[in-house]
Image (cartoon, rainbow, N blue to C red):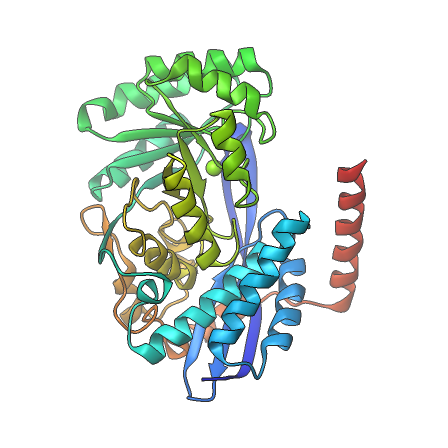
Length: 402
Ligand SMILES: [Mg+2]
């Protein structure tokens, strides 16, 4: 089966929510890739930008797809993996979103041809029901309480909170949330994602002391990504009451060995777009397990196309330590569902679980997309934007290397 043609476009959704430290997220970008084969099958994939810009991902994806056109699918998959692994070895900037979108589309086409779920192509479908976790963005504590209740009503047993970085505010927020929701009595795992916000060790230490008083089970990325030595000290001080999860610190599969040597983590978070190709992500997850880490599959608010792929990735793991965090942007912004209503019922949460779509790839086909409505969110990629973006990337690279 050969790649006959491809198509890629960017979706740009205006959103408004806050992550830890009151950092506002005002847009989400989604690179959607379609790969058509000579057998008439169309594979769908999605990537979101991480550490690069979405425009840079888009341009890079077009370049890669141009090289892969005419190849058979298996060869395209191995070329893609090799290309990404070479970039990891050279420690170059990796356009994770491009690799994720393209490999996902290839895997979907292959799975559709074999009439199997994508999980099977990735290495095995170990489960068809997948527990999911609920994320609560930072807002007024009472709004956060409302959102937590909303998740609990849907049967979710793992809640992740974004937090303020001011120590007094942190205490106030946790106090309000824990007093009203009684999460501790509900058997819910409580995770707090600091998004690197405690810059000093003593501040991080105080924050974890407060968290342990309120029954926080896991803290995600308490300090900046490169401060592994200090994170290891925190881990030692609060083990086994609070587990440390690393997220932003992971940029290459090779980082896992460093985490292990430094004993800096209990859990590693692999979120969409993080390591690009799903097959490379899966391999890194298996490696993390061998090194003794627990593993979490995180979220970056994808459309249902990416969500279906992440359900398949989670289904392909022999052991799933934590519920899948990716539940799709449509859970937070329902009008951004990319599927026609009759299809969107497939990816809903029942009793804290989602179902693996079916045995035909991701079970999402080109005809299932609401392309007419989505057109309003297509991002126009004009040469001037590309130039502006290239200059911005170049400058930020120079500044990073100073
Ligand atoms: Mg995180």
